[in-house]
Image (cartoon, rainbow, N blue to C red):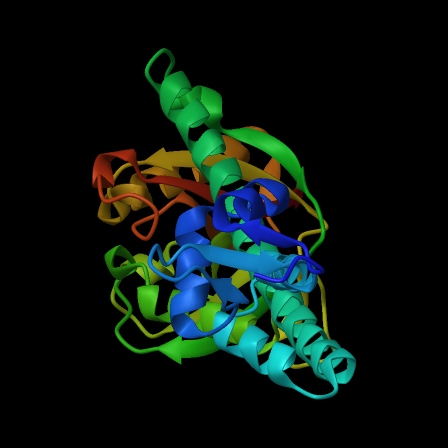
Length: 287
């Protein structure tokens, strides 16, 4: 070993650079950072000072999530600076896409937790008071939604048209939108007609975080409504519809638009049908 150069044992390098000895041995094995000197007989590894600087570069690039093969290519490149710049720019793009995906996942989780919380609160209230107390007058706020609207032949309300729901998720993915609310089905037929296996003019929509100039976007809300909460199977929801219509008639209101159902806790949220929560929305005005 030359006396003019300063060498560091593998243990010393591990301590100085905060890199495990096991990792240093692996770097040696794959040829990423080979010790400058090995002591004959003992096979002890020794690194020179310049290699510590290389190790810091490796560590920095690993913290950015850059694979070892790419790091090795950078270090071995005659123009290290340019190679590193190109690699880091590429990695930044990957990080940006990951951040975007995580933001979408967070928004979806946020929407789900809000609906789960609202649904669970309703379920708790329903255990202590009658459903009559859950019928009320509300101003439905205006929201941006994506939607589909088509005639569905021989419609049966109990089927809840989950196929239309998945269409909406595909539209949201196409436009890279964040889902911000529940699925809403709107029946552009006479009240209660959707329960009699007739052709149904069915609209499905879901709130999203923004609107775009497209036929798949519209506004929902901006009207006064009688709302009623239905808990349980969808094939029994006609009873809640009828109760809400009776309630609004008794209080001097008339129906003023197509009736909707908002699925707060739906079949795609929880499997227990007895805990599905649907909000019936009936636009009204004073008679």
